[in-house]
Image 1 (cartoon, rainbow, N blue to C red):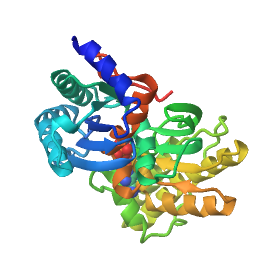
Image 2: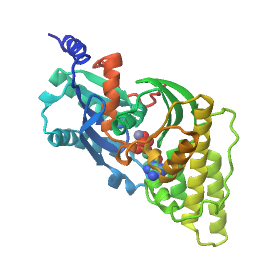
Image 3: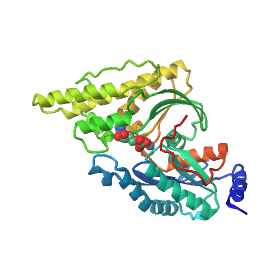
Image 4: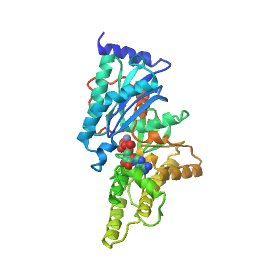
Length: 352
Ligand code: KG4
Ligand code: ZN
């Protein structure tokens, strides 16, 4: 039997199998992560090797260093995931991998690794969109969550408001016109000379600051549910430079709090507007920025006020991990079957 014949037969079986175990690998940016997920909902293993220490020296992710580190770590995180779950490759039904969006070299290391493994084991390969992975982190945290719901996806590279119609089916309601929310946080952190990655640093510092110290502009955008963060970022940068030129000591906590409030209130207001106007039955957050403590608090408050259930991934599942890829892969397998071995990295892949 050829690989293709074997995989086609396996996919047909898996569609009716009671427990489907997927080994997933994520290498789209600076985390090498592997996981083993059952039926898209249960985490049997979740191993994340963060490369932060390798990139911190340069103030951001260096693509070549990331690719090299992924090559070295792929095998190790997979072995570790199997050990954590007390399983061998025989217990795995399919191999999943993030195919985009992300850094091309980083993605290629993961895609090559899982293509090789899938071929060697004769098990289906599943290609996963990284953003869809972030949305799926909610399925791992909330066993009761089912589509449809409105999801605010906010990460280092994306800021989207999407309606999740069904598993793997999305409608775009709004998106950022310029910077992603995480990118804006990282840039503001750099202005305050906080180390990479800046988002969590700004968040921590902001807890002790006054969010009304600096009034930052509210963007006027044509798209009703669209976002824009570049104006806020520029106003922030100018205010900081002016204080520096005047020889003032920067009140970093107040500045961080003001910036965080400007970004988060925009995120919350538009998400709630969309929820109201589209009669969303429930709300969810996804992506690295969904770890932001003010975003979580303000969204909870707004959702409670509107009488809407709010779903947020567990903190550990907000930022990049393999578990979310394994969850998304399960629903992708049921919907579309396996990916071909001609699968390539797709650095600019979109959710829709
Ligand atoms: O989803 P993610 O891990 O990677 C991408 O797919 O981009 O998101 C990383 C982004 C970074 O920009 C990081 O600064 C931001 O999420 N981030 C935060 C927080 N934790 C991570 N931003 C604000 N507050 C946080 N607590
Ligand atoms: Zn991500």
